[in-house]
Amino acid sequence: MTAQKPALRLEGIVKTFPGVRALDGVSFEVMPGEVHALLGENGAGKSTLMKVLGGIYQPDDGTIFIDETPVTMGSPLDAKAKGVVFIHQELSLSEELSVAENIYLGELPAKSFGRVDWDKLHSDSAAILKRLNCKFTPQTIVGDLSIANKQMVEIARALTVDAKAVIFDEPTASLTDAEKVVLFDIINDLSQQGVGIVYISHRMDEIFTISTKISVLRDGEYRGSLTTAETNEDEVTQLMIGRSLDLGQKVEHAQTGKVAIEVRNLSCGSLYHDVNFKVRAGEVVGFYGLVGAGRTEIAETLFGLRTPTEGTILLDGEEVRIHSPVDAIRHGISLVPEDRKGQGLVLGMNCRDNMTLPQVGDLTAGPFVSDGAEIAIFDQYRDKLAIKTPSWRQRAGNLSGGNQQKIVIGKWLSMAPKVLIVDEPTRGIDVGSKSEIHNLIRDLAKQGYAVIVISSEMPEVLRVSDRVIAMFHGEIIREFTSEEVTEDNLVQAISGIRTDKVA
Image 1: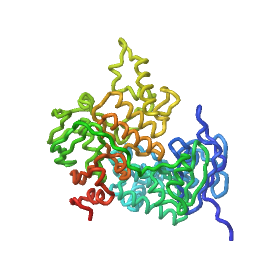
Image 2: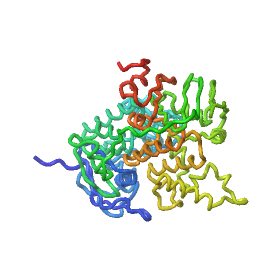
Image 3: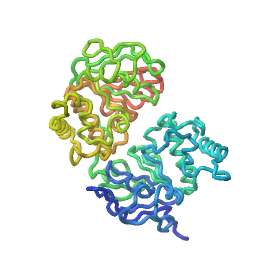
Image 4: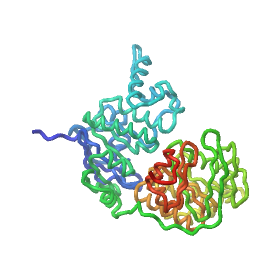
């Protein structure tokens, strides 16, 4: 019997950027029908390796094989033509074009004289959207879609060709639980058809649900492969970062002080209604619920991005009116947003300028911004938060996810807030940096900050919170202390079950 050949194979891949050897002789292969997870900390080289495979980067050395035939991937379209499709973590859609045009971008069906065959384009796109259970139409403008639906359009692109391999780079980062189920069904379908799947994710539960094999990169080098069914999270973590972590361990809780912020009967149209809660100095309060429960919308209201239709916000017992982020910052409320790259950072600016941006008007020396004052602030919080960067001159876009998040947190800590709101603190962050962020949140509480954490990851909420507030369809259903909260009663609460006892 002839041994099965890899669907794709990379051998000795080297890729160097100025001052950084991102890939150092990496070899990797995917068999037909295999779901192969590629893991590693931020900066380990995962996305760089896949961008080489997907034709985005050209390797400095090494060879790519498709069906054991050496090939050159000159561009993403060239890679797609050879049967390799890359579904990006960062959306690469044209917002002004329709869904159908995005799905078939670069290969629109044509009639005579080069005219676009719109009927075929829309019917072919409709068939793909139906397969993905999407509710929007091929004619919908992509810019009008939610982030989750834009991700589904990215996935739809992979279904337009007879793919030999499909690369999924953090595909569930913006998907609801229902959309994740659809995605996993699609991956299983592709696998059964003999397509090799490369799956990059920081979410261990997904890795152990969907993959058959796990390979690990660390510091740009291949560190080994494991059969998913024969390993566990601790073994994978040790291979990734060289040590084990106990992310499920409860952290030590701080002594709390007076009430820093209180919300009474707060409502915002149909987004949430009659919300009441308090957060004390030195306390971490976690908000947990399904997508659309109203958690982020409450945070945006407290930060002045939304205007409440009813209710009262009190800081240190005094009622305040917050009409804009400027008002919120003046009152000592800061928000680390869910989308750190789109809303928390200017990726093209350096680390120092990102960290001092909200207070740049206060750091002037005559008509100019004081470089010395800015550098002093950056140095203080680089050391305090253990931010890993060669210097303040490094572009924020070049940092790992964990260090980007620390830059955003440092930006607000330098403003000495009373209340720090952190929305999805570890989204897209590797397991080692995730532990650092969790410890940082608890350290901030010990220093007396009132911290609100919004997270879609139950273990995260359970680990960092002194109290957990469960939301369902814009309402607070239950509030738990850290001692009484369990996975069971939290799941019941976010499902809308009003009960004080576990069923």
